[in-house]
Picture 1 (cartoon, rainbow, N blue to C red):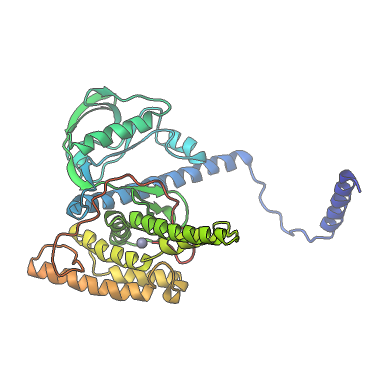
Picture 2 (picture 1 turned 90 degrees about the vertical axis):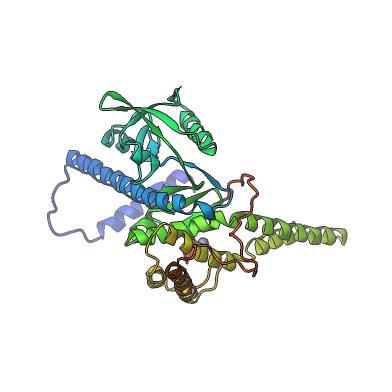
Length: 390
Ligand SMILES: [Zn+2]
């Protein structure tokens, strides 16, 4: 049967079926396309507003944590200025056009967020200011200029160099100097997806919008940001990659041995070894991120007393995590361990002792995260499965 005849038959069959279908009985309002178009824009604007508000909230909490926790970040510290910028190309797809008109964005770089208490806030930099120059460097526009601007600020941050900023505010040039302070050198990003998850990739912290919607208080935001920061500060991703490499090598030897014996394993042993070893100590790393994370949280003066209760909420929301053993501890294990850590930290506060996590060895030292400053390759985010990989 030719494809055309087949298609015609299918259409005829569909018509017959539709004729037999029941149709609605009432006269619903006719949709005015123009009004629907206006409403579409309004709803998209609300989405951008919601993203921007959540972004600012996340930056404010992170700003407090990375600045107060600098001494727990080992060599991964840099000068922190405390301002975030964007332009018309910063958001993707439909949100791009909406952000452009709703926030009056162009090719130039506009200040999006200045967390309260940050160096930029103290220097009176404001949201909506347009960046003109930094230390006499005229900020370019066009393709690649965002990376240049990012790199410039990053370079100055490494040497704790103050930024002499010229910004355009209400059509007038405003000059100010931002003096950086030391902070953990990990940025936080907000992904505008309704996924309830967050992860650390060794270089930065990523929080999904769906996770922000789940948080009830700033303390809860701080709990998750601190946990992810602890993964980065303690170089867990680096350690996992090393474990995966060692396991992969052992597997490769088995593959070679099999090949010598005339068996083609297609590298199965290597993949198996790499996967198993990559997950080695996974639960322990999670426990450490919970433990060190609470220290980060307390140092930033967030309330840790309800931290354990967050895992009860996560359990209600995701009952599999109560009993399911994965790469993460179960929610009851997390609850109990966090209660114990909170008691430990509160006792230190009561005695006026420094807020330094306890090491395994009896020899008490500062927690020294691995001092290897090598940049890590980008890795894929933890797979988003149930339960979430926080
Ligand atoms: Zn984690």
